Length: 272
Image 1 (cartoon, rainbow, N blue to C red):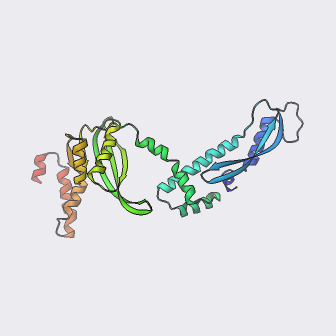
Image 2 (cartoon, rainbow, N blue to C red; image 1 turned 180 degrees about the horizontal axis):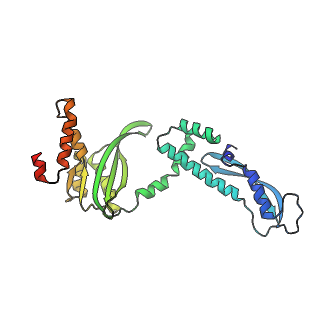
Image 3 (tube, helix red, strand yellow; image 1 turned 90 degrees about the vertical axis):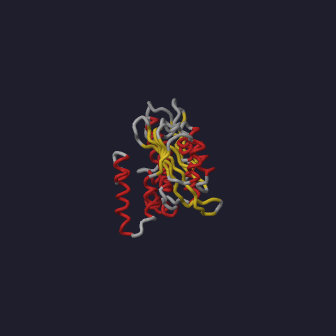
């Protein structure tokens, strides 16, 4: 029962102590004020993401109030916290082998890949609620995509991860509006992602910033027509570096481009 190593005392000891408190008397103690009598144990198994946990629950009889040990409820909450910790490690990229080694060292627990999958599945409802939450008023929208390795039908493929970041109109702070994974940055995938954001209430009132990918630009024209668009300065600088003839010149060229972006007026930018 490695699970019980999560507690300073065994669950059986805690349950026996709680039963004595409930009855108002220790085992075999004669007490006229006692509230019922001990009545052995009942075997019970708790199903958790870490497997089946066998327990012995103390029973009482002739008691005015039903008895159930609070220690088991605390144990279940601790198991929940542990499963969330496993899921968090998985999301941070920790391998199943390393998760197993960490839990064996801390708690004496051995975790399989199936158990890790069960733990991460508990995050699905929270993720789904986050992905479908209403979007607050947004003044500016920032769109980008990066490629990550994703296992699809047993094959590892390079997929596009779409990210939408909004600048809230209320306080000017950035917030991640949504994330989606598609096979590529084709217009149909970008359009589907943007349409899902619009359905949740997104309507930028200022501008949209992104790179100059043709699929993304076409999708923006279809979903958010009439909203000013500007090219991402970072991507523009990256593209400009390809035209610099010498490696030692790249830092100075990048500094010059940044100075143009940071000027206070169009006239000053043209002079530079």
